[in-house]
Image (cartoon, rainbow, N blue to C red; front, side):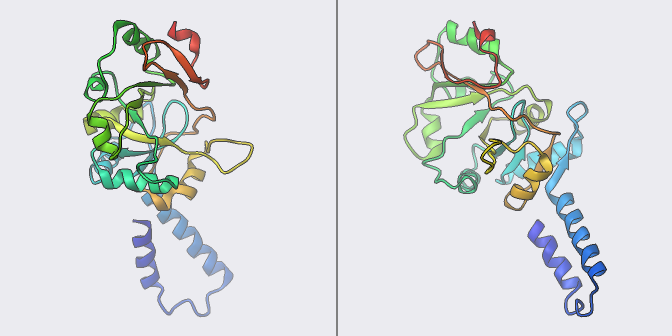
Length: 245
């Protein structure tokens, strides 16, 4: 959409830039920035998510487009797990092939979890209940449906249920989980980009739009391996480990 907007504006000023003053170019630049913001960044308020922006995001996902979403930790790229082209595009944005990509699944709750995982015992369920919703990624054994999504042998799946009303509503409307991957910074000091305006500048041209839910966190989720039924911390992050025991 951004490229389309540029094309339209280009036609409007075709052959008319000769004699433009510095002020003229400055005003044109500001106009282009406003158009880009209009098309790319949707400001959604967590306390009162605007219905039109929620539906716009769901529609983009249903069409097989990639979007940027806030979570309860960091911002992420997201795509419909049933749209192979969208998954390939998201992998391309990350600079890897789909077969190499290690995407997590975002759920709105635990109701659809068994559609993608093997059966697990009561102990694992209790651990999940203690950490969900929240800043945890749980690694579970995947069922046969997951390899078909990624086109490769994949025996485990990372699942998240973030405590964020915006992404929760979007997943509920979509009707199934999202495939996601974190947005990282090229900065050697700061690992993640937290400012949605900066995220829009970097990723806006590559995605359908960026959902601006306010500043994001600068710490990823705590990753917990439950594949063998025993709690093992793979990475300490924003999630308080003591809540799981």
